Amino acid sequence: MVATETPIPVTSFAVQVRELSKWFGNFQVLNRIDLDISVGEKVVICGPSGSGKSTLIRCINQLEPFESGRLHVHGVEMSDARKNVQMVKQQIGMVFQHFNLFPHLSVMENCVLGPMTVRGLSRRQAEDIADHYLARVRISEQAFKYPGQLSGGQQQRVAIARALCMEPKILLFDEPTSALDPEMVKEILDTMTDLARDGITMICVTHEMGFARQVADRVIFMDKGQIVEVNRPDVFFKLQSNERTRQFLANLV
Ligand code: ADP
Ligand code: MG
Image (spheres, helix red, strand yellow):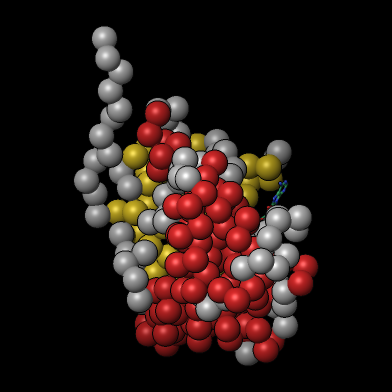
C-alpha cells in the first residue's frame, strides 16, 4: 500500500485551542484555555508576569508539550504524530525576547540555515529569500556582520527576517521589544506594524498598548493561567469587564 499524506483540511482558523491545560510539576500554568484565531488575524496577548503567556505560545509552536486539551494549526491536530505535523510546524515562525540568533553565524548564515536544512532549499534559493526579507526589515547592509556587532534593535530585525525566511503563515512574538533600549522599541514596532499589513497571522505577547490599539484585531488578557478577557482593542481599552484587567491596565501607565 502506498502511504498517503493526510490532506490539510480547509479551515478559516489558523489556530484552535480547546481546553488546553498544562502543569509544571504540581503547578498548573495553563488552565483550560480556549482560543480560536482566524487566518490573517492579529492578536495581542498581555497580562502579568507569570500568567502563562509564553507557555501558551510555546505550546502553540510545539516547543512545550501539554497534558490535556487539543490544538489545531490550520485544521491539523497537533497532538497527532502524523507526517504532516512537521510540515505545519514549519508554518509557524517565532521571535523571542532575547533574539536567540546564533552568535557564531553571520546575519546571512542565520537566515539561510533553516531554509536550507528544514525546507531543503539550495544555498542560492535560500540566499535570494534572505536578501528579500533582510531588505524587508531594512537591514540588508548588515548581512555579513555577526549578531554581536549589531544593536539590539538590529538583532531583533534580523530575528524577524530569519523567521520570515521560513515563509511561515503564522508569526509568534514573545515580548519582542522588552529587552530593547527605549529608542529601539519603535523600530521593532514599526517593523511589526509593516508586517501586519500582509496576510500573515500574528500572535504577539506584548505590553506595548499603542501597538495593540493600532494593529490588533483582538486583545487578550491572561491571568493565572486563564484567559480572563478578550475584546476588540477599542472595547478592551474602554471597558474592561474584569477587575484584574482594569488593575493591570491602570498599572501600565
Ligand atoms: P509569562 O510569559 O506570562 O510571564 P510564563 O508562561 O513564562 O509566564 O510562566 C508561567 C509560570 O510558569 C511562571 O510561574 C513560571 O515560573 C512557570 N514556568 C515557566 N516555565 C517553567 C518551567 N520550564 N518549569 C517550571 N515552571 C515554569
Ligand atoms: Mg513570558
